[in-house]
Length: 176
Image (cartoon, rainbow, N blue to C red; front, side, top):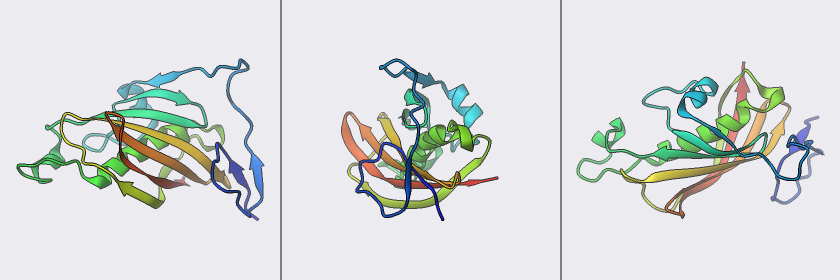
């Protein structure tokens, strides 16, 4: 029987047994804002150039959510072929960038530390506008649930200038 841990769920209740995850915030009523530099992100995630797609975490709530920044520049290698004369950031890289922000959250969950997280599913992803050099991609990823200390589901959203670029659900699997 699978045990499901609900976190920040705004979805409809599921029929699976659920258990509410304890709140890991500080004892005060206000949550502490935490940021991560590019160097600190590299200590948490295995991605390196050209696939390190998060420059900074600007807001982090342990075990719940993270907001990350990706500064999009013309110097990135994918713009040579996507597309010559009209550079557009590939949608798969936008999804990967959102997943890397989610990876920061997953690597910090105490019972999941020390593993490698891979995509287990990508659902309901929609792209709303193009991302071009000069844009700053702001990605917000919220942990929805963790199952069996092995799978996680997150709601992800990416914006440029407060305009929705992409959103969807990302599923992760922990591999040893």
